Length: 183
Image 1 (cartoon, rainbow, N blue to C red):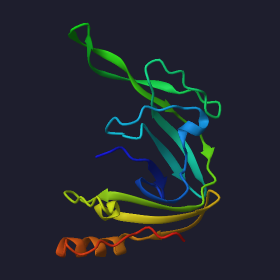
Image 2: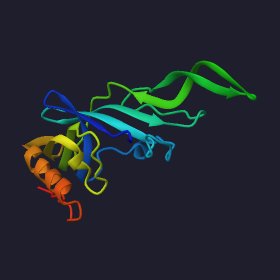
Image 3: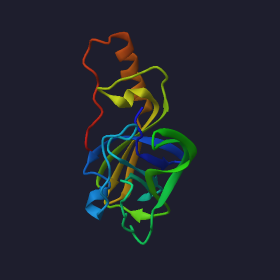
Image 4: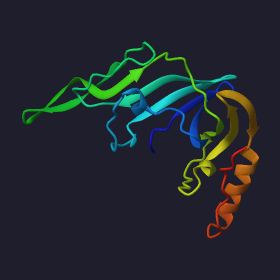
């Protein structure tokens, strides 16, 4: 399962399943060149957002090359993560604590002026995979609408999504319900 952006909303942590509108944040526009294509985070970065009246980028995790000199972001210098693992040194595997390519910008508190809809999901349904509609894999689904980064409305779509999931299980050959409308 790929790493997704996370959003803290209504006292819970949600996967950011879908964005309807412009992107929330792009590291490249801030001079941060990420390494893409590696799993479990194929785009090379993910964000952790907070939504309590306004949308805030709280943390940014980026995958960089070993020799990268990541810039400060809003005065915050990233820290490089380390992991206890083995690494091939010469032609022998050496155990130890090694730096990873992952860097984390913490406590950013960067307000975002996003306008659109965020679809948030939590409480994954085990064993259910719907590549054509990933929202069906969540029991709790919120459709959160923002205007210039300010919370405009939040609608609990869990029942609607549960109905579509039940229909999908009962008749998998039917076209899948799409949850992507702009409000």
